Image (cartoon, rainbow, N blue to C red):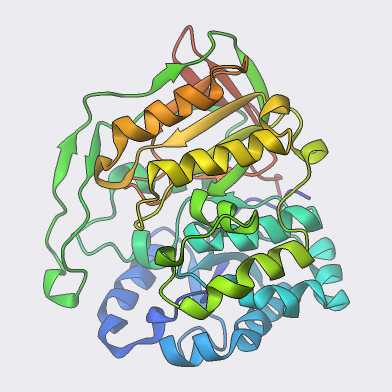
Length: 367
C-alpha cells in the first residue's frame, strides 16, 4: 500500500513512539523552531495527544504511545506521521498495536506517510507486516529542529525531493558530513554544526553487476535485537534487554527469507557504536537464515563520526565476499548526518560501473 503524496497545507502529525524528550520544557524553543520550518515548507504541524507528556510518562505508558498511532490512523485529516525521535523501547508498543484488529484495518483502509529512523525501525517492521510502504531517514527533533540557523541542506533537499515525488532520481553523496554536537541543549541554538568535507564518496565493492530490487532495512542494532543478538550496552532502559527479542519473535517482526528475496538491504548503525564483532555476528545470522543468499544488494551508511569506518568495511567485505551482489558503503542515511529518505518496497537500482544509485519509481501515489 503506497500512501498519497504530500501537498501544501497537509497536516503532519508529530508522534512520540519511543523517547519522550519532545515534551520536556527545555525542548520547547526547538519544538517551536521545527513547527516554523514545517510551516515554511507549507505544512500544518499537529501533535498527537500524548506526544508532549515527557520522558517519564511515555516510557511508563507504552499503551498511550500506541493509542496515539491508532488515533492518527483514524484521523482522515492527517496525511503524514513523523516520529519525534528514536530511543530504545518502541518495542513495548507492538503488543498494543498488532493485537488490535481495528488499528490493522485502519492502516489498510487509510495508508499514510510514516517517517522515522533508529528505534522507529520497529514501526517500519510492523508496517511491512501490514503491507504499508513507509519511509526511513528523518525525524522531527533531529532534522526539523536542527539547532543551526537552517536545516542541513542535504537532508532538507531529500525531504523536498520526497514531496516532489519524481518518477525516478539518482541519489548522490553529500559533499559534507557533520560531526555530532557535544551539547544539544538550547544554549547551542543558532550555532552551526562542524562540517567535514567528504573525501571518500560512495565505496562500491563485491560485484560490478548492475542490480535492481525493492528496498528494505533499518538500524542494525534494532534488527540484530529482533534476531536475538543483543548487547545490554545498547539500551538505556536495561529492562528492555530481557523482553525485546520475546516480543519481536512473538509478533514475527523480522521478515522471512522469502519476503527478502530479491531485496536491496539498507543498513545503518547508531550512536551506541556497535562493535565490529557484533556486526559480524549479525551478518552471519543473516547468512545462517539464508537471507544473504537471496539479496540483490546491500547499502551501508557512513558510521557516525566515522568510528570503526575501516573495521566495519572489513567485516562487510569478509562476510559478503562469497555472494554475487554489489555493496555500497558510506551512504548518507540514519544516524550519520546528513540523511537521505529511503522508501521501503520501492525499486532501487545499483550500478557499480557508473557508481550510481537510483530510485526507479515514484515514492508515493499521485493524488
